[in-house]
Length: 79
Image (cartoon, rainbow, N blue to C red; front, side):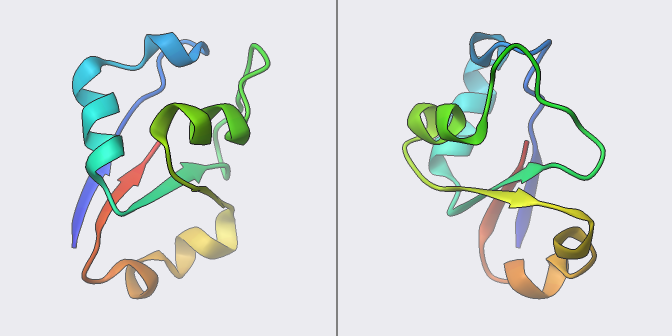
């Protein structure tokens, strides 16, 4: 498993870096860390899915605790 951590910047989807966007598009699974982070400025999961061109899985506390077993063998991004 390869795990990438990508910051979304200050709240607008355009704040993500070019490298972060390329990495997210190349990953097999994208998780939106929803346990401690708060999306702002009207940004939501559907906007992220549109930008990345693939499903974004909302990761709550329970999913994060089970994370390693579900992601083994994938290229994974946490945003």
